[in-house]
Image (cartoon, rainbow, N blue to C red; front, side, top):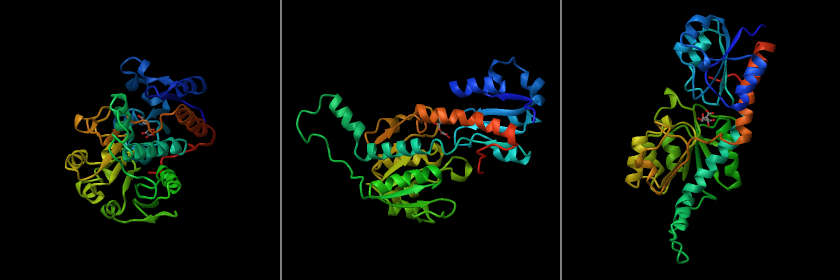
Length: 312
Ligand code: 8YV
């Protein structure tokens, strides 16, 4: 199959940007004059993009002969997958290669929040460690009950780590899976059962505000919420109210509604730990994600199939 034009919608990262240019001769949209899409869009067969940049209905409409989209990131909430599939366009994301790093960060946030590590560090940095035992007691992690919302590949990597902490794991999702953890058909019931609830599902209309005021109330005053999925899954106003009212014990958040940036109502709270959407942000994992963006397009050219199609 001839490549036709390979279009890169936006910068992805140093490795992907270089390989797309060297191995696929990709045209960089951001370097083209205004009007390029309207004039040249029909020549484009393959598109490289990212979950940050996305690929909406307008972009798809501007590329009438598009055959495949390869997107950086496991999330695809910014891609119009339904519209692409309706036209027979294959859509690939970058799953698997980031599971371990995202699961590691979920555990980092869980332990940091429960054991109040950032607040303890601030206590020492401020020179307040003047007597032994001056820092308040925190919450135990090992042996607790772990609830996971969304037991996909990342959710399962989080669950496996829970076994190392002697935690019983249960989960909620669209449907039960063949896993050694108990499925809980009701999210409020899962929240009421667990001590720590980790959000590991994707974004989009299906999961919007699943973590509601009711779910937070069920989690309870010593419960901890961790979110490494998407900010849109948590009703953020309800979360702020729950933290202010002592309805839950704390939150560890890698993703927020309205990111980048965090509202003062969250970032100024001692029992909240926030990281700037860095779940996959290690040198090793980002390199693997960038390589997979390119490999998906090379596989499509070779075999007519991308390696890791979005499972929508
Ligand atoms: C990225 C992600 O860290 O893959 C995804 O869907 O959310 C992460 O891997 C994120 O897109 C950074 O902006």
